[in-house]
Amino acid sequence: MRTTTGWRADGPAATLRQVPLERRDLRADDIAVRVERCGVCHTDLHSINNADGAVVPGHEFTGTVTEIGSAVTGFAVGDAVAVGNIVDSCGQCAMCLAGQENFCHEFPTTTYGGTDRHDGTTTLGGYAREYVVRESFAYALPDGLDPAAAAPLLCAGVTVWEPLRALGVGPGSRVAVAGLGGLGHLAVKFAVALGAEVAVISRTPDKLDDALELGARDLIVSTEDDRMAASRESFDVVIDTISAAHDLGSYLRLVAVDGTLAVVGHLGPISLEAMDLLVGRKKLTAAGSGGRPATRAMLEFCAEHDLVADVEVLPSAQVNEALERLGRGDVRYRFVLDMSDLD
Ligand SMILES: [Zn+2]
Ligand SMILES: [Zn+2]
Image (cartoon, rainbow, N blue to C red):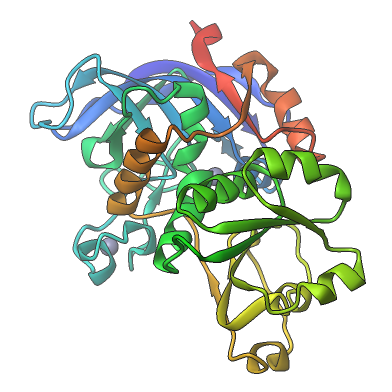
């Protein structure tokens, strides 16, 4: 075992404390990564609040390779890398063979709170100075992408990228994005860069300037019934990034004939009225995370389009403040922790 240091919550809703952490010794196909920047995701907050024991969160980070295993071919010491929310999968099921490791039939190994497929230990996340990962689940960070602003691409980014691509969003597509947080702001940026006409749906009108700045053409206020009615059936794709449970009917009504509502922000039971699908032959889908090919394609696209998240970088010692502010939606649009204060 090797020792590093990181931020751990010891029980439900606990304050994170800096503690020593153990990482495995490198296997032949492992690399060791010095974590430099790690995004703060809604899932981190959820995992801490519902912790069944200790949790070290963090599953969208960038850093530098410091050591490689004997069989590693894709990376060298000193390479800039990025790691997302999946660190292993079975590699043999139909989903893995199709490059959809995020849907692995044996469930992918998550970056934290997962069970390592070899030694059975619980994985500890990227709120730490070092991470050890199979090289096949690390990605080369393209030159020119700021390591802090790129970190959220690895969870929030790929979670909205994969459905946008799968739904064929491109020039001329009409896309609406509900919710303008970590996921939503990246969905807007991606859809705009893909050539779509984009609108933001928000509960309040005060996000108009932000929406326009991100490249959207319009903001629809979800609490204005006449405005919602006027926008009926006007979008080929609606990306719903709202994390709280909510009624899908009002968003389905914005979907055009044969269009799709993609739910990416909420996990848990959903209810809907079948008539809201029937009228207009609409489709409902959900997505989360991404496979390795989609993750690589997203990073290439981001490098080409100079596209990264809008972030607020804090020293990792302010992790509890970041989580508290995220909990009340006080962030534009993603916190990223700078881990250099852990040295
Ligand atoms: Zn996440
Ligand atoms: Zn699999």
